[in-house]
Image 1 (cartoon, rainbow, N blue to C red):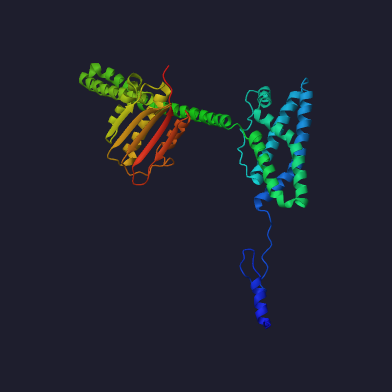
Image 2 (image 1 turned 60 degrees about the vertical axis):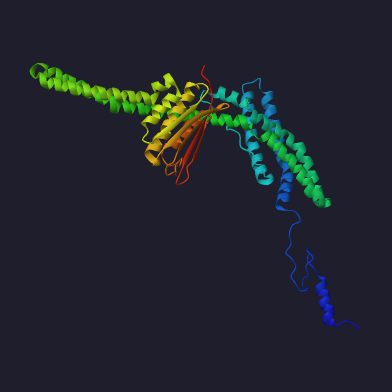
Length: 404
């Protein structure tokens, strides 16, 4: 028996399936066209095709500038031309890093920029000529051309005759490109990072020292100096009244004696703010116990150190705890606090904990940001854990250096 037309049509519609095996209607629209390769593969292909023109530009630049500069190095213009050529190599390397970041997904940090020397042109010239980043950039640009010729030819040919395996070829050659960028265009991470940090820390130290000097000058001018000037005037008036009115002169001398005591106390406080004598004489344990005794919140201090650290580290540790305990007194609303100081390997650890309201913030204007900069200047760390509602735990870490 022959099947009806409707049955045959239904069978033909059922026979049509999508790529996943699901039946589709005969009159269903076709799926939208899509590329066979994903976006990452196309970016790699574009990067491999750009290797040739970029390689030609870099190779011609390096060969021309560096060979001419080296050849004329016996003349006056040779070394400056070589130096400017190396600066250009750094610029072309920055372009290569940008392309690698956009097309290959390689995030390479930029090296430290060459800052003009304040001592003159000769110092700048020597700084450029011995710059390892510039020479590595020149090497990268020189070897880029033969590799670029190879990748360009293979990629262009594969686009027409071997496109099924092109994604695998592109991934392999792009991996070589990534290795070259990381090996030659990436700065020496540790060295460059340390140089940048030391330059930044040097500025912080200079600014902190200048601020401390201004504070000491202001305290002397507005405090002890003004009080001593008033004291000298009172003693002068008392001397004039000594014969005419001895009793009034005695009262003025008594008042001057009280002013002398206050001035001495202000000078002691100022000296303690510069460097407390108890810290020099007896170390961190006694000095921190003295600071804890002046805190408005009961504080327990535990110092477990096998020996005394270097004077600079000891002073920073003291002022860090002093500042933190002042914050506890002023802002925390705590009932008690603890201070723990100990040594772990080559680090001096400080932890200040209070059971206050919490919410301490490095940007809150409580002096924590200044402590962070002070500790950064000596390769220290400063971590604040202060959720709203408390407790607040502040951990400071300093490098351990023993006393000489």
